[in-house]
Structure formats: C-alpha cells, structure tokens
Length: 361
Image (cartoon, rainbow, N blue to C red; front, top):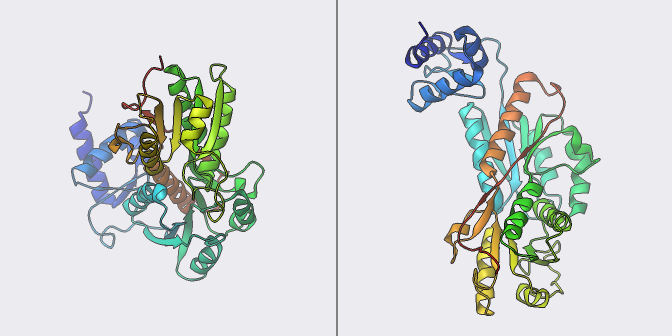
C-alpha cells in the first residue's frame, strides 16, 4: 500500500529527531520519493513548528548541543555590505537575512556611506576582524567608473562572495564570482510591450542615472524600443533633479512634461516608485492626467499601488534575489570556496497591471 503523506511526514520527523539534522536529498533517497516531495514535507513540518528548515536540511528542535552534527564545519559570520539609506535594496537584505538566519548563520550588517569606494575599507576591516566566512555585497556604484574601480579588488576577496542585485560587466574580473540579480532587461521589455499592446507608439522613460539598475534600465529601454517597429519615437529623461551620476551637477534637459508634449508621447515608464508618484503629481499640475492623457508603468512596485491612480508596475523579486544569494553563499560555505564554477543567477520580474494605463485611441 502506498504510504500516506501523513505517515511519510511522521517518518521524516522521527529521522530528524534521531539524527539532529538530515539533508533533504537523504530524506528523499531513504523514503523513495522525489526531492521536491521531501522538501514540501519538510516545509509543512516547519510551518507546523515540528522542526526547523535550513539550507537543504531539516533540523531537530532539540538544541544543537543535544543533537550534534559530526564533522560539520563552522560557518562563522556572514557579512552583509549594502549602501546606507538605499530603499531599493531593503527587500534584498531582508530576503538574505531570513535565509541565513534560517540556516542558523550569524549575519552582521555593514552599511556603506554614500561616497565612492566606501565598500573597500569596510570589507578589509571586517575580514581582518571577526570570524567572517562569507560576504554578501551590493556596491553602490553610482557611476560605471566606480564599478571599474572596484572590479579587481572585489574579485580577489579571499572568502566566498556573492554579488546581490549586481550583474558583473562583460569581461570584468567579477565574472569569476557568484552573483544573483534581477533581469532588468526582461523587466523593461515587459513594460514596453505592455504599452505597445495598448497602442502607444511614442514612449518616454523617466529614470535615474546613478546606479547599475538605472544604467541597465536605460540601456534595456533603448534596445526594446529599437527592436519594435511599432515604436515610432522614444526618449529618456532624468526622473529627478538629483538622479544623475553627479548629484551636484544640475541637469540641462527638458522636463518630462515638456518632453512628452514635444514628442507627442502617450506612454511613460518611470523608475522608481517614489519618483513615479512625484512625477505623476507634477504632470497633473502641468495639465497632464493619467490615464486620460498618457499611460504610465512604474518600475519597482513597492508603493506604486498607493498612487492616484494606482500605477501599473514592474515588480522585481527583490526578496527572492536576496534569498537566492544567501543560499548560494551557504552552498559555498558548505562545499568550500573552490567548489564548482561561478554562477550568475538572473531572477525575472513580473508585471502587475493596475489602472494607470489604458488603450490609446
């Protein structure tokens, strides 16, 4: 007779309580089920408070000193280095922290000041001090020159390292290190295709220009528009006065409202959410209302739903980026820093349709 799910989960619980910790792959093999089934059973038991789920393992609720795991190397501390006051990365940090804490790994957060090169002295200091075994890092990289300056020393860090929400440049030394990031090219394609499907032929991107994400979105927008013969005209403007690569230099370009009127644009993509809400308000003050006069898609989707109207938005899976980065680092810590080739993981964002975009008739 085929074993019921309840019986199987009881067997899992007994195995975990006996051994203290069991890999999900071992559970699957011993139970004669798929890894997916075993993982689902472990998740069900963890939600019920019967055991603890770690990175690829199930752990007993009995304290570790009563259920030791022989020969398991200490994972020490994982340092998390991100720019200070960077709202976009908050969800990434939460996703990484949750995965690390679930694996019983201590996390220490090191915010980097808003100056070029701030990450290097922080990394050097933390690696020379406490028992840091691994590093999760999202450098600010306001400009491409900042990124180039960090390339070699960051690639040479002598502990397992995973870049979060940063895609290494083609040909850079950081191609030798692991990275997990949002596929912003795909996200921008979703936004452009949505507006094109609604009949919009003249598009404007209002975006920042002071981060790797902003630079990727600008490049992706140009590529997406050039690839679609339906798009008759497109333009890019800064989303905010301080959104340029050099915040001390005032932009010399038309406003979004001026650009839209000059170009006859009816479709606008705005990066990111807060800037989008401000821009929609300013356009209304200039006599342009969404979706009456134009359709808008925001990029980020943290507060886009709170707009008036609620904004259609591309939503990067930022918490998932953090979680996957942490799990990749945990794998390195378990298998050793030289285990396997470097991996680059691109996470696809999704489009959430609301009422800020409509057919252009």
